[in-house]
Amino acid sequence: MAAAIEFKQVNKWFGKLHVLRDITLAIQPGEVVVVCGPSGSGKSTLIRCVNRLEPIQSGDVVVLGQSLTSPGVNFSQLRSQVGMVFQAFNLYPHMNALENIVLAPMKVKGLSRAEAEKIAVALLERVGIPEKAGQYPAHLSGGQQQRVAIARALAMQPKIMLFDEPTSALDPEMINEVLEVMTDLAREGMTMVVVTHEMGFAKRVSHRIVFMDEGQVVEEGKPETFFAAPRSERTKLFLSKILVH
Amino acid sequence: MMLAGILGLQYEFRWSVLWESPYGYWLLQGFKNTIVLSLLAWAIALLLGIALGLLRTAPWRLPRAIATAYVEFFRNTPLLVQLFFWYFAVPQILPAGPVRDAINSLNLDTPILTLNFEFLAALAGLGVYTSARVGETIRAGIQSIPRQQTEAALSSGLSLIQVYRHVLIPVGFRIVIPPMATEFLSIFKNSSLAVTIGFAEVTFQTQQVNSYTFKGLEAVTAATLIYLAISLTIAAFMNRMEHRYAIPGLIARGAVRE
Ligand SMILES: Nc1ncnc2c1ncn2[C@@H]1O[C@H](COP(=O)(O)OP(=O)(O)O)[C@@H](O)[C@H]1O
Ligand SMILES: [Mg+2]
Image 1 (cartoon, chains in turn brown, yellow):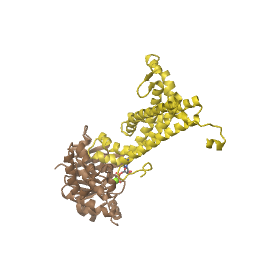
Image 2 (cartoon, chains in turn green, brown; image 1 turned 30 degrees about the vertical axis):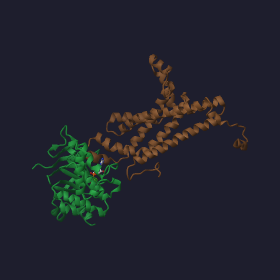
Image 3 (cartoon, chains in turn red, brown; image 1 turned 90 degrees about the vertical axis):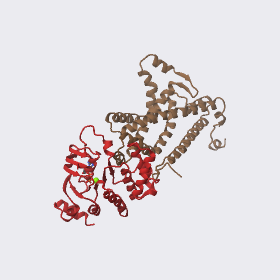
Image 4 (tube, chains in turn green, orange; image 1 turned 120 degrees about the horizontal axis):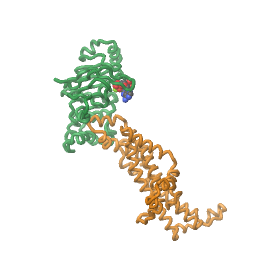
C-alpha cells in the first residue's frame, strides 16, 4: 500500500536556520505516529509541511499520492483532506461551536447548512459535548474548546489528522478528555501524526514514535522498544528529562 | 445679565440672535452642511480605508507597499495643509481648460446642499485624510488576530479570500469598533477646519453671525452645543453597535459601559 505521507530528504530553512535536515520518513495509512523531541527541534515545522502551511526548500513531501512540490498542486483540496489541531485551539471567536464546525464543509465542500449541521451535531456527540453546540469559544473550557477544534477538523472527513501539542495548553484535569477523543480516533483507524509529550498516550496508542532533535529524526521505533531500549544518547537524555515527572 | 454683572463685564447677551431671521437659519444651514460633509467624507473614508487596511495585511507586495505609502503620507501630514492642497493647489495643477473652468465656477443647488468647489475640496480633504486613519485602524485590528487563527482556517481548506471573508474581517471589524467610533467622532470635529477654505459649515456660519451681530459669544456657544450634541449622539450610537456586535467573552476595553 502507498504511504499516506512520505517525506523524501526534506530540507527546510528559516533564513539561515536549518530547521529540517534531510528528513526521510513514511507514514502508512491507519498508522498513528507520535513525534517528540526538545522544544525547537522542528516538530511543528515537520507536520506543518504536510498541509503546506510551510513550504520546503529541497526534497519532496508526498501526501495521499500527491507530490507537494510538483507544479499546480491544489492546496485547498489537499488541506481539506488533512485535518489539523493546534495547541491554542484557534476556534473562531465570533462563531459558536456549531458554526465553527460547519464553516469549512459549507464553504469548501459546498454542503448545505442542513447537511453540514447534521455532521456537526454527530461530531459534537462523538467528542462528548453535544450540549455545547450553541456555546461560544470564550464560554467553553480549554478541554471543550480543543474537542470542538477536533470536531471541526473531522467535519471535513479528512484522511489524515495532524496534532501539534494538542494538550500542552490544557489544565491537567482536562488533558484526558482530549486524549480519550484522540484514542478513539486512532482505534477507528485514522492516520494520525501527533506531536506530544504525553508519553502515556504514546505508549498506549501509537504504533511508532519518532524522536527529533535539531531538525533531524534521531531515532524511531515501536513504543515498546523506544522506551525500553532507546539507542541514541540524545534520546536517553530526553526521555530521562520528561519521564521524571 | 447676572453673571456678566458679577464679573464686571459690559457684555450684553442677546441669545435671540440664535433664532432670529436670518441668523438662526444660517446656523441651521451650517449644521446641515456639517452633517452632510462629515457623513459623505465618512463614506469615502470607510470605503477607501477598509480597502487600504485590508491590502496592508495581504500577501501581495506591490499593492501592500502602495497602501502603506498612502496611509503613512496622509496620516502624518496636517489635515489643514491637506485641505489647502485640495483647495488652492489642485486647481492650479489641473491643465487650463473646460474641466478647470467647470470646477472653479461650480455652483449647483441641490436638495441637500450647494455643490461648489469649496465643498468638493473639503470632502476630498476630509475623506482622504480620514481614510488613511481608518486604513491604519483596520490594519491594526486585522493584525491583532493571532496568525494561527488564519492557519487554522487555511488548514481546513478555505482559500485566503474565504479566510478574510469569514474570519479575519468579521473578527477584525468587531475588534476595531471602539477606535472606529473615535474616528467617526473626529471627522465631525475635523470638519470645522473646512471653514478655512470657505465651506459654509457650522463654524463658518458662526463667524458670519458674529460679524453681522457682534454676538460672538452666543454664536460660539451655539456651535459648541451643536458639536457636543453630535458627539454625544454618535457616542451613544457606536456604543450600541459595540454591544450588538461584541464577540462573546471579548467584551472590550473602554467604550462599553453597562
Ligand atoms: N516562522 C518562523 N520563522 C523563523 N523561525 C522559525 C519559525 N517557526 C519556527 N522557527 C524556528 O524553527 C525552529 C523549529 O521550530 P518548531 O518546528 O516550532 O520546533 P518545535 O515544534 O519542535 O518546538 C526553532 O528554532 C524555531 O525558533
Ligand atoms: Mg512546536
